[in-house]
Length: 196
Image (cartoon, rainbow, N blue to C red; front, side):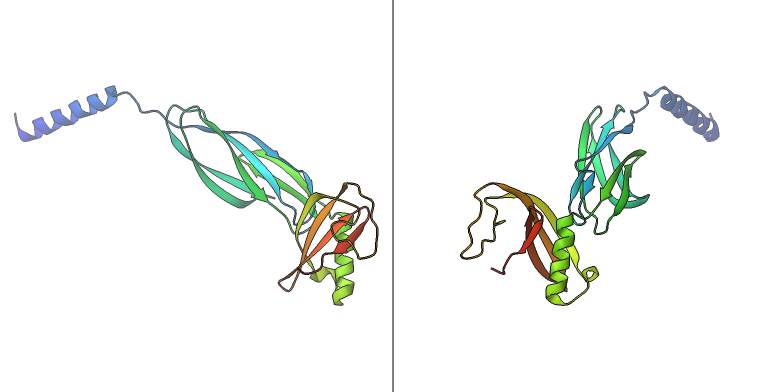
């Protein structure tokens, strides 16, 4: 046989063997759910978005989760899943401004409403008056629900007596020029926490 005939024969045999080989499996991914722990939050208050992903294929593979806010990529993560494996990937997000925000991942969607708690507005107004600035110059760092031991909201004034009842409220942290001011709020009032 000539060299050309042998080469053609080898190519045909290799092609036949490749065609007979069992195909390798593929990873296939499906976003099976998207859930938000709190759909109504204060500006600066974090909420958790959980994205459920499952590998429905028959091979291990990686998947890139793109969490979007109002259609724009907010955060991206790459996960590795075995065949049949499912996970809930958690993202913590917060928004500085009031409004309605749509969060989505691979077609699954949820809406988050950001509305200022009246106590946050009150704290901003008090701090603005104290510092002689506009409330718009004050950023909300965080708002955290809590329970205070009594009606003093954790900031008792000397000589005052407070009802000894568990008082639901908020720890509100405001920022002006890099300085953090902490307020405690509850029962329709807010109190500035003195610097420690």
